[in-house]
Amino acid sequence: MDRHLGRLHAAARRLLNDRSEAEDVCQEAFLQAWKQAETWRPGQARFGTWLHQVMLNACRDRLRRQRPQSELDLNTLTDRGHGPEQAFGVAERERALQAALAELPERQREAVVLCHYGDLPQAEVAASLGLSVDALESLLARARRQLRLRLTGPPEGTNTD
Image (tube, rainbow, N blue to C red):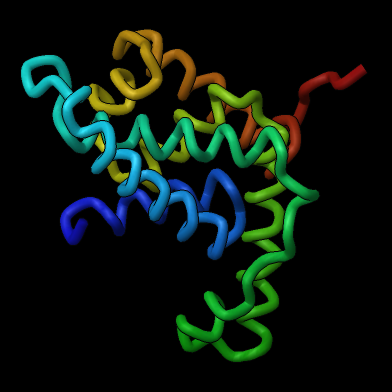
């Protein structure tokens, strides 16, 4: 648990946008891993990859039945020691990022979150999503393009008609 909890929680929190939901999902993932340990095949996937797949499936289940997106947890801002002005700017950027992530197609959102917030190598993310590394890179490129557009708008000189 010590080795995997931090990365699992970071990815689940980004996917679910809710700290307590992420904690519940991580608990479910470790419980499922314990119950289904015999289904993990050491030669086919690393344990961390398999565990992330279990967490990802739990997140997908939660998202299917999830209530509307919760507000940003302001405790994360005070934990960083920001003053009110900085906290407001951080909160606004966080809201914009969360909104942009939420608008991405599910597979793109999962790829971005696992690669950037789950701190996993691309090969493990690709395995978790059932993709080749090339397909993952393509998925990430499309996701980053969409995020950039949503967060900064179209490049200057681009005709949006």
